[in-house]
Image: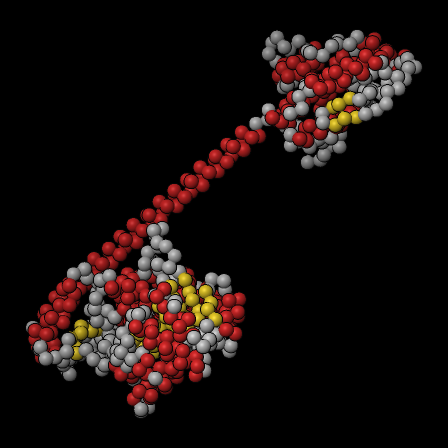
Length: 639
């Protein structure tokens, strides 16, 4: 839009009505009738209009008033008032008539001779001859005289008086009088204080602000109410989903119970697998021991004690034998593995606590990380931040003094305690143990003898409090040197890679490991450690507690960057707390909670690796994988 410097942008109705209200005020009309230049008056009109939020120059205000007066005179002279057509010419006819009807009409001859009697005469702002014609018509209230009568030669040779002290608006202009009468100046001084100075008190801005604040508060209240309803609906949905899963698992348990009843009627085939049995059959019975074949037992969620029917039936058949375990052989290829993964993941879903507004900070898990020295500061950070990303509320890192500042700089979400190398490190850490729900030992620990000794004492005191423990990295070096530190602790989980597993196996069995049968080796190692849960990381993660071997075959990627094991151990610490809490609440019976937590953590780590590799390819790092924890967790456990 092009802007005319004289007229400006188009005037809106609101802006025009505001201008007329200001122009029609008593002090403005008095000033227009006074003996001083109208440019001062329109300067004050422009200033008052700006105070109302409309930016206009004095010249634009004067031109707009003149245009409105021209429209008013055309409507009035056209005698359109009686037939109701005046609004088509002058929209603001009523307002202009109210203002102009109170002004005294000047005689045309006096308007010419006085030099300053008309509103528009002598203000120095006229644009052309038409403006003078409009001013004359306005004051006279009748048709203009012929153009010959407007000749300026008839003006008397008298000086133009300059006003005395005139107050227009909030500005005071003081000028020394030259040729003005005392009565005129006294009248102006007497009229000036009568002007209403606090015009904005009548403007409804305060009421508008009050209404706006009330509407904002009401909108915020409605938002929180809707959000609370959404959370309640989400809770109901989760409860219904868990109820459906419970019902499905109960039905599966009944089905397998009927199968086991049929199988136990033939003792020869029930106690020991037949040598002539075909390798492709889906379900068989096998004695529970370290040499059992990798499979899946009948670990289903059941609401009542009859979940141990398999053990009771086997004891009736053979009181001297060990309890029979209903297993499943996976000789059917990838479809069988996917079926196993789905079954285990459904159990992992059942241990995840729902997010509700009734919980408080720390209720979903407070995890401690023992590790972090001068050489290794990234590993404890990866483990601690992964625990938070999975769902823990608080994450503590107990590290050496020179590593604390570095780890703190990685993230403000972590609580860092620089006490691991202090003389009373065990006592300092023990003060926090009652507040922790899980402990991860090893990420960035190093192999300093003092630190290893401190870690050993912390493990012993954590076992005394029956807190789940995950041991990884340099913590496994400690276990290799002193296996008794974790031996027989059912809430302990070891997470070795191939090299760490080899050292640990040879330290316990004093013979080389048979790498051709890793399932048998991992089962033997767990049994030798007192049925501690062992996770052998590799192409397929093997998980066992000495009785059953589970294989996590969720697709990952070929990228093996440092720090993935720390992500695994941190997330496993959280899941171990959830699993043991669910087991204590009776949500499932025949499954080892540590095995369930290990399987969930392995699945989550592999899914994060796969998603990050799809985005970054060969440049994938552990930091990229941590960014995928949220979406991977939702895909695996909340879909």
